[in-house]
Image (cartoon, rainbow, N blue to C red; front, side, top):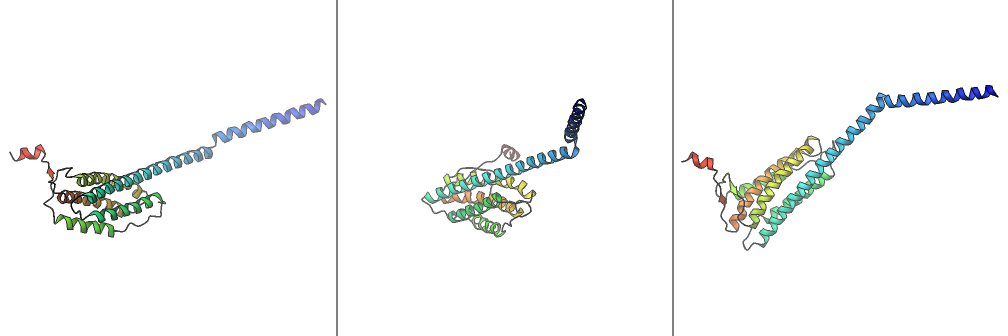
Length: 215
């Protein structure tokens, strides 16, 4: 009986020793540490990418909303604003861009058609011929449509900045940034056109440094 007890105690001690050794090995096993670190790094990277996507989506929606506001002001004006339909087309393109950003998959970049940028170039040229030479410093104003387009222009710059990380990560076509950069120029030109249509004068600012040069 005593012999059986001793054998049972020895087997129990050996079992506990093996379990403790197994636990120690699992805690200090480099492969487990590396696996956990890699998993944590991937989660952080994924969260950062998702945050960048959210910023780009929000900025795109904000831009489209202000363009819509400007379009409504232009529509309500007693004067004819020839660019209203163009603004609507731009909003549709921004919705397509929003969808592309939202559904973006790394390594599967959807092409952004450069004809959209070409359209902007043509429109800018068309309206520039009807306007006086562009001044460097224009104080935003000149009517509700004009002021709203100035706001849209500044937001467009934010959208352009927000898509750069997505382009660098292979989520978006480079042409989208080129389009947004040109869209900023178009919105500035159109804001000036809006002031002209509403018979409002542009408020030009001359920096003090420029004034002192000519004194």
